[in-house]
Image (cartoon, rainbow, N blue to C red; front, side, top):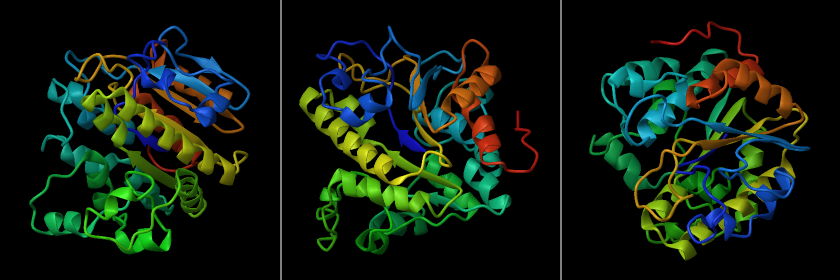
Length: 313
């Protein structure tokens, strides 16, 4: 799963939607030369299927990272449970359900291997040990499932991917030994990690930060770096037996006219030899308007995980 924080489906106006100003040949190649837009939110092509997912989850207010990530990773509508959207850190009342039902735990309980590809600096681990930082849904899910969080040593060995993809930011974090790599090389690493696991996730949160910053030039740079990662990943994975999911938790970067999140649908891009069948199954789960909670059931079926798929209320 290539998880993109803060990426919705927006207009075709390249002045406010950087997707239509950036050079994104890898993403365009997956979608037969097109990109997701509000006037073309769905596509079934040669290599991939695109579906729009409702990120509002039927709850008033702007979608947020906490509820979006909870819905994607657990299949549970936490916004409905709480009565509002929350983020980026989950409410304490949602934590037991996140711990028990997240996809990392489900994979581990089924004797599969789950990998979180992101790498964290030493200061993050220090904060966690001293309980001076709050965990996101993704990091909490990993720790509750016993999935190892990767550190600087992993990145130096090429066994992990930097949150900024290239590793340029690690010098400022006190790690001058971390080499800078191309986005394509980072994609090769991500593909290599996925080859060793049942489920692999990479969290790219720079897209959400770029949306809040509202700089078209900066957003273009972030998206083109992301496209290089996608190019490298696609070059090294076997789509006959691998499913690549590209999705998000809420909209933001696709509309730089506002600093806040958006209510736009988010893209779900399924890349595999069986992408049309998987898209139909997600639509079957979600009816005419699939939302973020409808991804996990089909993902679990695809991984052939043999245990109770019932979810907490």
